[in-house]
Image (tube, rainbow, N blue to C red; front, side, top):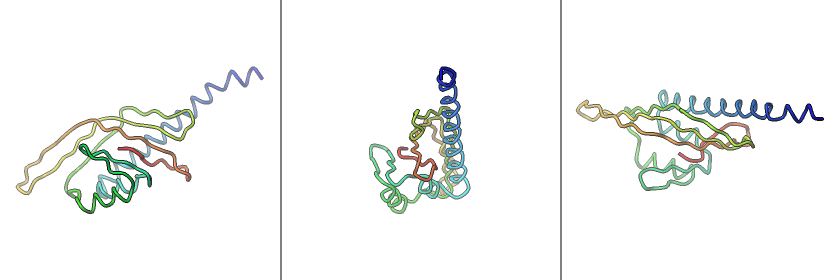
Length: 138
């Protein structure tokens, strides 16, 4: 019994590392889809039904509201959004995690002038009933 108790923290840490890797892979797939299929499509594909976006000082609540925002304010299809997490952590329960890191948004105006903005993103991920990770806050 003592032997099993001694092994538990290492086993839990191994599981946490697996969950972290799953979240990093979800971020990687999210960014890949944004680059290949478009930002709007990627955000809708990786958003949980209860997802919330914070844009400017406005909170957009729920996947339907996110979809409506993209429809009403279409994302420039020539714009590029790139990001990669520098940090990931996950709850010991394995159902909630978060990432943050740098992003770069590049847009080209009608005259061909390119502008870039950079910043730090923060995403909260929630494990769904099917085991996949979807974001609930971005």
